[in-house]
Amino acid sequence: MLGLCGVRQIPGTQGTDFSSYLTGKSTKTPDSVYFQIFGPFHGDGTPWAWRGLRTATHAYARTQKGPWVLYDLSADPFEQKNLADAPEARAIREKLEARLQQWFKATGDSWKYDWTHLVEDSGRLYKHNTFYTVQEYLDWAKQHPDLDAAP
Image 1 (cartoon, rainbow, N blue to C red):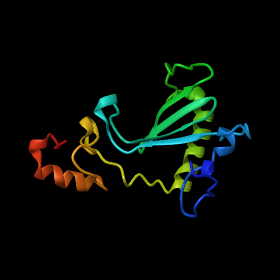
Image 2 (image 1 turned 90 degrees about the vertical axis):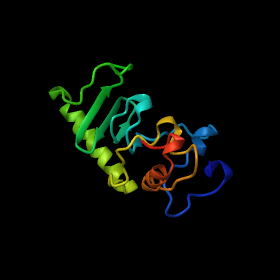
Image 3 (image 1 turned 135 degrees about the vertical axis):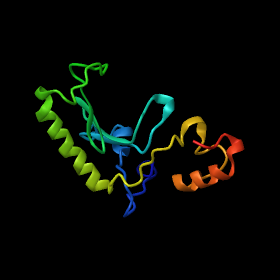
């Protein structure tokens, strides 16, 4: 958004300027995108925190303990066959893991902000107040059990 407004990246912030791509001045796109989920979400069946990477040909995600899912998007665009533990996918898994480790380093992701409570289910984290940390929400929820706030 800043790039579209002509603002250069602000030092110390994360992000990539896609304004030239969005305006048709360039066809260059990143080789991968990084995504992260910090805790479980019952609404979509996410049982734990995870991090992931998507390239043009593969989708890979892991938990803090190790690989979780790996899909070959060229051969399996509907992500039906999980190759995370497949011996034949070892080389691509290692390549994607190395790329994910680069993202961890670039973003400072140490997994230390993850949570285990179902704080996002039913809008709990946002419905009654603005909370800056999960712990702040949990403290508030203990004081307001009548508001369906407790996880």
